[in-house]
Image (cartoon, rainbow, N blue to C red; front, side, top):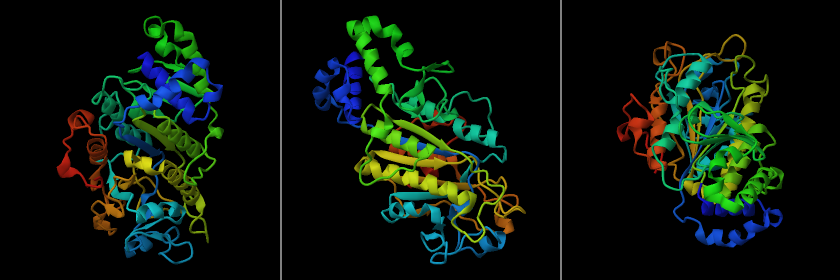
Length: 423
C-alpha cells in the first residue's frame, strides 16, 4: 500500500471524526497537508440498499388511481390521498405509503425517482435463488461466482485506488460484492472484517494481515505507528458523529449503517461503493393494521427504512451531487391479498433512485394495469424493466463504467434499454 496515501487518508479520516487531538503524534504533521493533497477529481459514489424478504412494492408505491387495486386488496389497500391514513400523492395515479412521508420533499425537489414493475426475468419465487440472481447479476445462472458490484470494481480500476473502495455494512461480504476485487465488511467502524480478494477468508479485527507483507518495504519504521493509528481508527465512536442539516437517523440497525456510510463519505477515504440491507419484508400475514392504514408490519418497517434513507440524503446535502442511492428487493408480491391479510411471493417490484443527478419526480417503467390479463400468470405485477438495465444505467451514467458486457455476462444492455432516470 502507498504510505503517503495511507497516512494522508488516515489523517483526513481522523480529522473528519473530530479525533485528531487523540491521534498518534506522527499523524498530526500530515493532517494539514492532507487538505492540500486531496484529489480534487472526486469519484462518484453508489449506495445500494437491499430489502431482503421481498417488499410489497404495490403498497410501497401505491397505484391508487387504478380501481383494480382496491378490488384486489379489500382489507390491506391504502386509502387515497387526503383520506385518513391516505397515501402521499405523487402524480395523480401513484402515491407513497404514508410511512414514506419523509421521501416527499425529495420527490418534489425532483431528486427521487421510482422504477415500477422492475425485477428479474426469472420467475423463481425462492428468496434464496432470487437474491442470488439479483446480486450476481445473472438471473437463472447459479454458477456465477462473483457479484455484479465486484465486477464493477474489477472493470474500473485506477492506480492508487483506496482499499476502502467498497464497504458493506454487514457482518459478511454480501453476494453482490464477492469476487476478486478487495472489499470490506463491517457491522460498525470499530469491528470489521477485510475481504482480501476472491473467495479468501475474512480477516477479523484489523488491517494487519492485509498490510503485513508491505510493512518492511512500504511502511518501514513507521509500520508500528501506522498499525496503532489503524487500531485507533477502528475505535472511532459513531456516537460522536454529528449529522448535518438537521438530519436525524433512527436508532435502528439500518439507521446506524447509513449514518456510518455518511461518516465514511465525509472522511474522503476513497469510498465508491457502499452496501446496506434491511430484512423482515416477507409480509405473508397482517401486512396492514386494522384501523391503522399507516401501521402494521409493512408500515412499521417502511417508517424506519424511509427515515434512515431520508436522514442519509439530508445529512450528505450538497454531497448528493456525487452520490446515488439505489434500492432493490428480490421480487415483488402478489397483486391480490391472501387470506391472512398479507401477500405472497410475486414478481415485478419497485426500485427507488435518489440523488441530485436523478431526474426525479417521475415514476418510470411500463405500467400495464391490474386486470387478470395484465398480470404475470394472472397474479403478479409483470416485469417491464429488467433490473440489470437499472444497474447498467447507474453504472454507466453515474459511475462512468462502460464495460456493461462484463458487468452482466450473457445479457445485452445499453442506452436503448435505459429508462433515462439519470441525467
